View 1 (cartoon, rainbow, N blue to C red):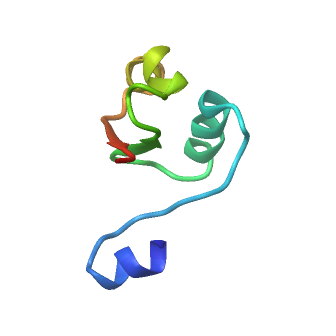
View 2 (cartoon, rainbow, N blue to C red; view 1 turned 90 degrees about the vertical axis):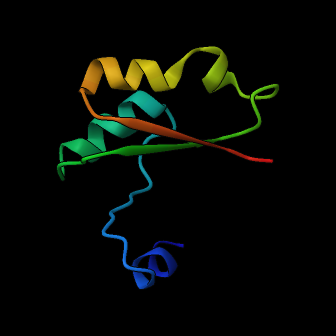
Length: 72
């Protein structure tokens, strides 16, 4: 997927990290600077991450803009 997005002109990095999303973000940011974090999650009615307000927690802890992409 990253290759496809890069082919369309986007500059991006991605890693598979820790199962805990906060630790995963911290680990990724220890390796490269991000200008935005994209959180991909289940629909709002099924998402534990959205119920726990994970995007706001990431913004607060790391000071990086967060975009949420929800599955249909």
